[in-house]
Image 1 (tube, helix red, strand yellow):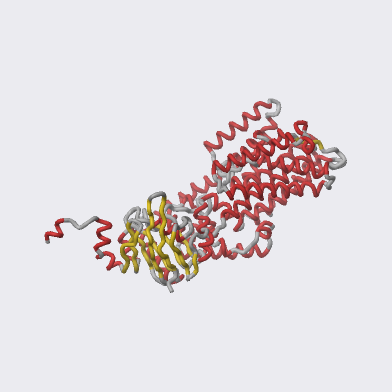
Image 2: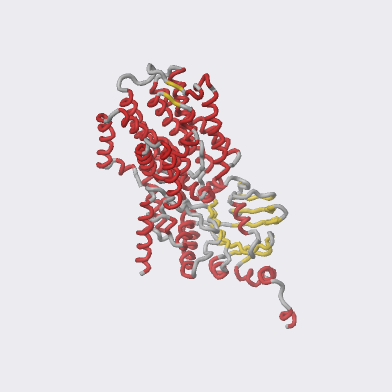
Length: 260
Length: 321
């Protein structure tokens, strides 16, 4: 049985059918990519999996249990983490505080013992702060722990957002354009972090990305969406050579090829 | 940032000591002003939970403050409940009403300006009740608490100490809470509700918590106000009062507890200076609010963020070299 199953999911906005019976199945221990031209429905699919949009029909299953149409925070608890296309850090908070919000559900302190500063509350707080710093080590941002998120350069914002999503290791990590707007050096840095997330934490990653170099380099299995339908899937090589995919991206092959 | 450890600083000890000793040498008038300042610290800390930390535009805070004052007065003078119990009950009652409003707001999924308008309408409704339910509230003539229910002897000094103890306890609670997972969850909702839910934060529940806490603080503050003044009017809790509380929070610096202290201390003092020309007081609040909104939206306590930003930029630059 696969880890995350998306069965026949459809969703329309007004008259526009954004997703039309899409089915994907995602297994453990691999890096998946979801590609497609603009407006293909990639972000819609991620928003449905993570509970931000409701689906019209179909089903989403995690580990065999249905999670369709649950609230986003319940889906995070069930084990699906995500990042956003536009960086959505808690801008007024420091780097380490952002990480601590990522650890939110691992902190057990109740409101009264937190408010009166009970001993076990303070101990747990110190322990989680240490844990947050360890995660910052993992993504190489420990020195910046006291900088306010709003003051970070764009590349580091992306890195922090990624780190915050894996502070409590999820089963599945959904990334919406994690390297969008980054230069080649920054992209390579994120490459390494992705591989470590997959190998050391055992997290399954599904990434949406327009940067094709990046997608072909890191992913092991690619799904291609176009106009709300899945038109192809397979290894990077297979997808690259698939005529349907080429057509979706570049249009129909022109007369020159027919002449040959 | 005020962290629990730094609260026990020596300097803080001196301030605390003087808060207890100085009033012994004050004239009655100054004692009342100081008492009002301490009450405002409580009320503004409450407002800060909902507006400053969670970022919900609630315009009902002054009316909830009034509800605390009226319910405490009723408990004390009509039901003859002892003073110490009645203002706590006033706070709890206000918190329950706050819970009810917030529950309705969450059910209808209102946010932003719409939430502001609904809370404002609710506030006007409360003030209307203060004005028209005459058997209970005394209507436009106000509610007077007869002296036999109030503090005996040096009443102003006693009520000051009561307010001070409440303020210290509630301050302690707020500082601890804000530096815990609960406070961080509130701030994360303000900064990005979407991302906050992606971290597993149950945003509606936390909004409810912040609304209830803020109503509780307002209710306690209102109860203490009625104990000090022993005479309250519907006009004390209308639009004018809301503007005052809003200015205190913005000028002090929303989203920080030190901002609440600064706002609650500074504005009443400055407006006392202008007391002789009462029309100037209103103008002062309005102008100060507008100027701060434009030039220092993070308020006085936000200055240190500006300093830190300069320092951060410098650090980043030196790393690049």
